[in-house]
Amino acid sequence: MSDLLERLRGRGWRMTSQRRVVAEVLSGDHVHLTADEVHARAVERLPEISRATVYNTLGELVTLGEIVEVSTEGRAKRYDPNAHHPHQHLVCSGCGTIRDVHPVGDPLCDLPPDQRYGFVVSEAEVTYRGLCPDCA
View 1 (cartoon, helix red, strand yellow):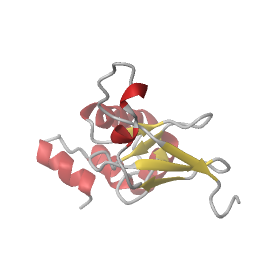
View 2 (cartoon, rainbow, N blue to C red):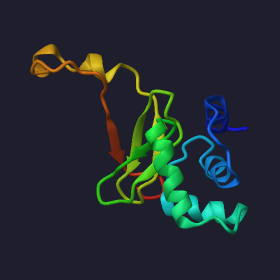
View 3 (cartoon, rainbow, N blue to C red):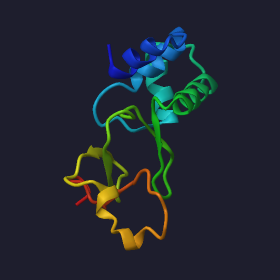
């Protein structure tokens, strides 16, 4: 059972066959699928699942904080099930591939106090961009 499925069951989230399939599709490392990709993979497992059900389930999972919506410039939103493990993203500027990365250092601590302008910083989002081996 995936980490996402375990977390959802632990929350007592009503696990319909459609919700289970969406959660199963989102399991794994470096998973950053678009809603359409989630739907296509879900249909392979449960042919009757509708696009609306997939979109609604993704929306619920984002609201619950169980998945993270990842937006990159000019591309469709992607969904990351790695919501409970701090990480950043490495994005290919060519094909849009996204990988989870764990850089050394804390982005919150790396922002000097004189650059915070009085803000109480609670989180930082860093996106690394470049070309993957296939696009380089």
